[in-house]
Image (cartoon, rainbow, N blue to C red):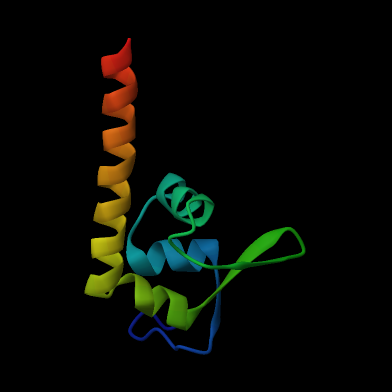
Length: 83
């Protein structure tokens, strides 16, 4: 794997993606679970296209993640306030 360049059509493992994005294992799992990064399962393991990794570092994705976080936070606060 070339750490200097993410190739849009290359296929990456979750470990490779984690290293490229400099995130923890739990963060990559959370991103996959929440659909913030699209991946295909092959033989029980996720495979991620380079273009998905590149999309993640775009400003649009950050805005979507913030919006998603704020929606979840709002639901939790509302639920707590009902108690």
